Length: 212
Image (cartoon, rainbow, N blue to C red; front, side, top):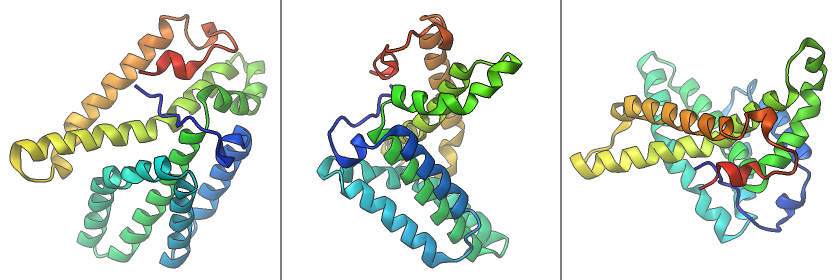
């Protein structure tokens, strides 16, 4: 269900998970203050180039752009309606670039490696009784779910087109929310059946447990 890891031995697969997550975090922080189109187009081009570097399998994954398009259209139309169309385009470009970068990380990083890289960040919180493993799993799942939810959105849009001949757009947001909640329930049940986040032993492949 959420095992969107693209198996391979590319340069991106060989990079440490911590480094990829750090670059993603830095890119996100640097992208938000940008308020002009050209730098965001450069960032978007870099993101597309990363997918292209994985060859044909990576290029095929760029279908995520089509899946994300309804959200971008809604954002641009909203800003156009309130007289800030330029800002809407900037927001849409920023979101698309960051979603692609996050998706690239999920494609080239096993969830186990992602958790191992994230856990040290939360380790100080164990002194307050919090579980660093649970927090790491929650963050890893959040990153992993980005392409999954976009896939659900794409499937709903295709189903609506097949029935009505029109794009679903805002009409599919309600069923999309329902599907998202169902997915979260399924993942929660899968983890709970194995003793919860703390019950998953180290070395047990989480991608395999939660995969198809």
